[in-house]
Figure 1 (cartoon, rainbow, N blue to C red):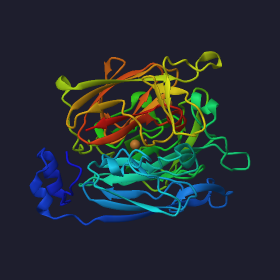
Figure 2 (figure 1 turned 120 degrees about the vertical axis):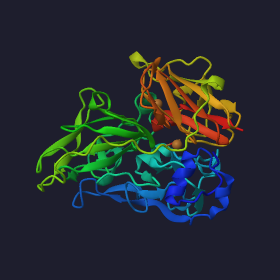
Figure 3 (figure 1 turned 180 degrees about the vertical axis):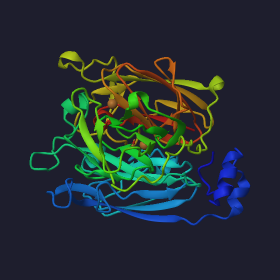
Figure 4 (figure 1 turned 45 degrees about the vertical axis):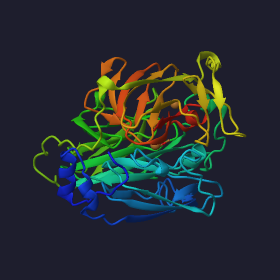
Length: 478
Ligand code: C2O
Ligand code: CU
Ligand code: CU
């Protein structure tokens, strides 16, 4: 598909165009939709994780808040977002999961120079896909995301979906000192070569002890986004049966998650339909039990005393309208393989990676602990990163990702969404597309995509410490 034109958002017109498979050139002249203008200022600020009366924590913010403001944009409508840097170090904004022109991708060195202190950068793109995305810096990522820079990005469907309320929980994990400050020591070799910087406080939309008030009988669309540096999550909604509608913004066949657990690795999003079948006045916990023996209550669903909104629950939720993703041609696809290597093994030893060669930012501190296909690219992105492989524009690519390490890795691809075909030889059901694919230790995952978006694109683990310490690569679409 084309990324460089604006299509009109006459609601029916848009859907008809998508359904008709080809968005024709005639639509270019159908009149450009108004440009949606937004402003974001990046600056230090203060957050109160335990409510207005709680102690303040010094953080870095978008427009003064943690998380940043929820940007609600419209599918197919051009947007212009001016980002002003009020930090005293360079930054960029990456629009995670959005299929946009390479120059708007926010990777320092690779797609743009960092925005210097006091300067601005204007991002312009037209989101082709509706769904739940997020935005975050891609410069000094470990520190900048770890100090709070992250915000939700919602691309609204041209036709609204029938639910009573549309809510979003942006989840962040903080490593705080006893007196409530963000702990230093970013990028220690210990974090880098093991599970990454997992923190000790998880917030939902910036609040640690909040609850979610709900009404009996209502149906929620709940958008979950894990904006943590390293914490994996597996959410259970006690007494409720969530139905997965979309993963990483991309609609899938609606289904109940395995064991009722929603696994959300860093950078992943899941949209669920949640029918509030509890009794008026009741309370139900939402538990994260990803790590054995370390389950905790993330939040509580607190039912209003009001009588149920409707006598009978709604029928099974409807599938969300699919996005205009090109179907890969598997019979003629180019095969590529990405092998994840390195990390700490048993006995506190770093895994030896045969022929591991470094390609770091000059003068960057911290070494490489990981590699992809024997090569360690460290840091956030910088000029001169040689592509691991090159694809011709329009080619289908069959990508195998093989995790040879003893750790979990949410592998994220910029600029594309991947059709997830199989995990360890078993087909992945529900027609899932993802931009962030979680590999358990030793997993082998096969995916496919059409290389329709030219540029140099990053592919990396979204555990920030892992990315910084070598679990990153670049591929080129000509
Ligand atoms: Cu969410 Cu390379 O990023
Ligand atoms: Cu991304
Ligand atoms: Cu990783």
